[in-house]
Image 1 (spheres, rainbow, N blue to C red):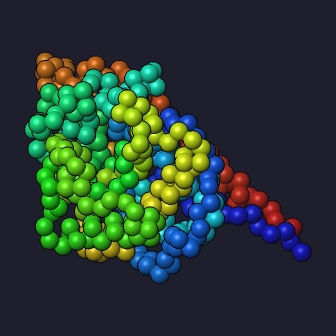
Image 2 (image 1 turned 120 degrees about the horizontal axis):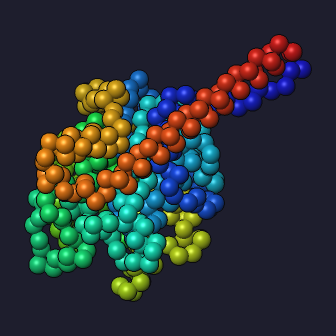
Image 3 (image 1 turned 60 degrees about the vertical axis):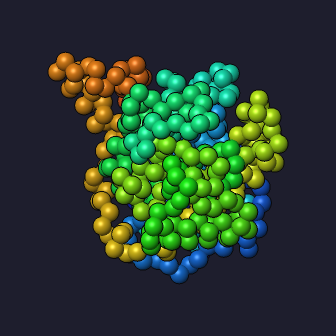
Length: 388
């Protein structure tokens, strides 16, 4: 009797879609093992598979002090590439959904800000130049509320003055996602536009977004999360945010902000505890619950978004390397004597160049490893068939 065939490698198209995200994930330390979540709490449907592509973009680590968000990014990538399971949850039904997804992940949007936190500035949410990246986008930019705190909410010298925001704007144009999720910590909530006013958008798109969030909340959190507009539910208005730009300007059908953890009992002086779990049990619970939330989000989005919106989105050949056009444009303008126009890039230019060289090298190495694995498995299958 011939030995049973080894399990097949992950589908090639999934590896291609996730290679860039995995290269970025090398910047983050691995998360801990999973706690058990009852499968009955978070069932995944098997009957919504349609021949279409659903594009999802996820950004983590926009604020330096919210370290848990990048840990979630890495754990989610491990699950998507079958390197890790969620204990007690059968994910086999999700395999078919993956065939219809294209996912792009930025595990640490604010790399310099994270370095400042790791160096001891644990309350800092800003980037390396002292700007809040979630106030540096153009919708209602620069407006200050009565309780404005420049240490917390410095919007920069102009919309998109910061290289990180410019890069993310380029990605929104080239990738054209159906869902964009900006992941934060500080509380537990599922937010939709708007952040700069106490209201949600009008009409059917707003109803679709709320329906998706309410279903995720019900299925995964038993209706315990806050759901609604950021400006209406969080308790303060925020101007120049990523989510509002993506909805109003970039026309992303479903831009969301997820707040994945917050310790309301923590002292305001203990920022690490306020924004990040400090014990393993809580850490594992947060990671598992929110990984599952994303899997359900993918399914709910695929089920809810009208077919005509999916078809109308851009093709994958419109992708651009992360930051590539920004770097080239800056160099061209410098050679033309227009140094002042992109002052926001000058300080970080050399670091960005090094980062993207490493990024492309990591991507190549990952693809080589994946292709080698596929080739070895095919050779093994051929040998077994010949000896059977």
